[in-house]
Image 1 (cartoon, rainbow, N blue to C red):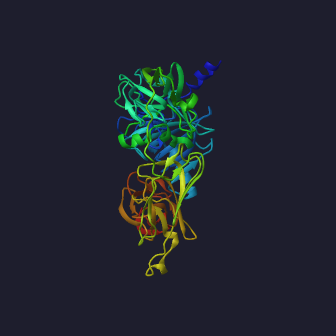
Image 2: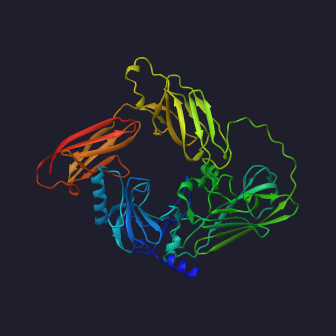
Image 3: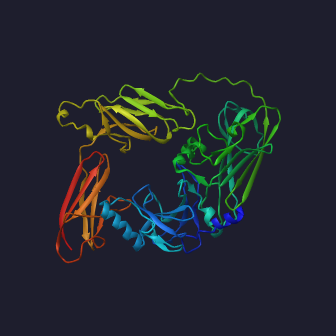
Length: 540
């Protein structure tokens, strides 16, 4: 009975394209700060391919310019899943009409339209959009996600489209890593890459990691590993199945993988043990969280088993001999502030405070604060880690603001203060009692207080072919919002992806082509509340 139900569930969806599926990326691939949350389906390197609903349901959400998805459509299905189609070039006429209705009703160009089941129902195989390259996309393709509608966990689309994807190629391991945890491996206490063909020795507690990729015929891409097992003397020490990932735990990919190694070598060694604060349910381990205790003078027989979703399998056995190591003398450690994974942490210095709440790290992390004195600036600059150290969630960072010089004190406006880094990014501008607070998620940035009282710059690019194009730039805190009106009535200006250009298509507004003169009012505001207005007249 269970197998029948499973078979029905796995056959409820059809492909979103009308040609054979070829993947540029699969579900769960480890990437910096996130798992890849869906399938990247090739569109022959071009935009404009027809995209279809994979199942019956209704359009529950349309987004424009959110979450790196570019233009995206969400379809909620009666079977308990929601499919998401991202990086789209444009929407079908019905979906675009619903989007415009939302934008004009709420007078907003950035859209997060939530719809009811009666607004835009769709049938399986119905045309919904054209593929594109919008959002955080480096080449044209369709990014397809499937979520559990109730929990919003990311599900592997492969389990629903399995029969439509060909794959007979097994995964392949490229190399292995040993990570001592108070023990030694090949006489060393440092982590290191090893070859299975060499004589291997260990003593004490040691964890292991594997660098591996999956492959498919007819494609040069490499993919993430669906299932990993590590056996020790025939007993399972570690098991991972990447098919269900809570969105709120996405950044724990940095804990499962050796993030520091990726940072320096751009390859992911995925650990076969679990950090104490890692809450990913797709990771399972035996005694000791998967860390192996080599405490007997004998041969330990280890084996990695790697599988893809189709069941293609690769096995990698190797032997490690338990060999007592001489006592290791450690150099006296230089005291450093330490962030503890199992509690809320605070780091304070005069004019500076960092709070790292419980749950933001998965293992104890030493800080290496570097404070650069800037007596003539609004604050000193501070860096908390010498190399990239991302946190799981945003955390508050506060600076006490120095009083400006007397020649500007009369025009000083605390609402124009914000926290920035060496790249000029905006991290917040909450000012209270002399302190300005922002929220950061990376400890290696060099943070300080900046001041922005300069409005954005607007200029006309073109006014032809029933289209108005404006360029908007801001040199400091960045664009926060914009709005536009023609003859004192709201109109939608779309932000053109990967540019500083904003476009108004006159044919998609309430305007009628009568040859009359109209007045455009366009206003843009940056993150510190500075606004600029551009006005012009045009005939239409």
